Amino acid sequence: MMRRLILLSLFISIAGCASAPAVPRVAGAYGDLGKAKLVLADDSRGAAADFTRAIELDPGNAPLYVLRGMSYRNLGDRQAAEADFKRAVSLDSGLEKAVRPFMP
Image (spheres, rainbow, N blue to C red):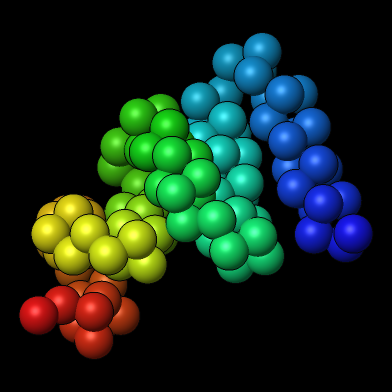
C-alpha cells in the first residue's frame, strides 16, 4: 500500500511539472519516478523508460545514465548497461569508482 502511495505521489508530481517551463525540474521528476520504480516497485523496465525520458530532457545528467544502467543490468541487458555506465563516466569522471563494480 505504501509503495502505491509513493508511486502515485510521484506520478502527480510529474503531471504537475509537465506544464512547467523548467526542463531540469521535469527531468528530475521522471528521475524520481524511475528511482521509485527501481527500488520500491522492483520494476526495472518501467524505471528504464522513466530514466530514458529524463535523459531526453537532460542529456548531461550523468547520474541518470548510472541509474538507467542499473535498470538495464537488472533486466539482463549488460551491453546497454555498460554503454550507460561509460556515458556517465564520460560526463562525470568522478563516477568511475561508483560504476567500476558493474563493468566487465
